Length: 215
Image 1 (cartoon, rainbow, N blue to C red):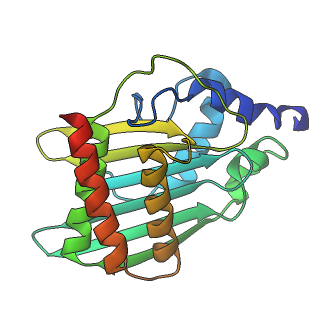
Image 2: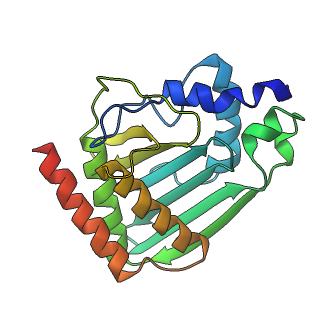
C-alpha cells in the first residue's frame, strides 16, 4: 500500500487542475466521486465533518499533498445572534493512515471553536458567496503534484449550498489572495483568536474585487 502514497498528489493535481486564476472551478460537492479516491473522501468526511454544521455560511476543506487535512467553517444563528468559527484537523494525516495501516478509526479530530462577531460572520460569508458565484469551467488544464486542493462552499437561504474548488493558485492571482487570507483566518481560529480588523478589511477589499470580475 505504501507504493500508492506518491500517487495521490499526481492524481489530485490532474483531477482538480487550474486554468483560470480569477475564479473557482465547479465541483459536485466537497469531494470527487472517482472510486480510486472514494474511500479516502469518505474517511475525511467521517473524521473531519462529522458533527459540524451542515449549513455553514462559509466552509473551506483543504486537502494537501503531503500534510494533514483541514476543515474551517463559519456558521451562526441570527435568531440567537451567536456566530462561530471552527477549525478542525486530524491527529494524523488521513490519507497516509488509510493507505498504510488501515486504522483511520484511530485518528482523532482536533477541534477549536471560537465565538466571533456578527460583523466578522457577515464579512467572511459574503466573500465566500461572491467568490463561489463566479465559478467557471476551465479552458486549459494545468496539473500539479505538490500543493493543495481547496474546496470552498457556502450555504445561502433560498439557494442551498454552492461550491467551487481550486488547486494551489499562482502567487500573483486573485485566487492566491483568496487562499492567503483564508489561511490567515484559519490560523487565528486555530489559536483561539478573533479575526483582526486589518484581516476583515482585506476580506472586504477582496470581495469588492471579486464583484468587479463577476460584472
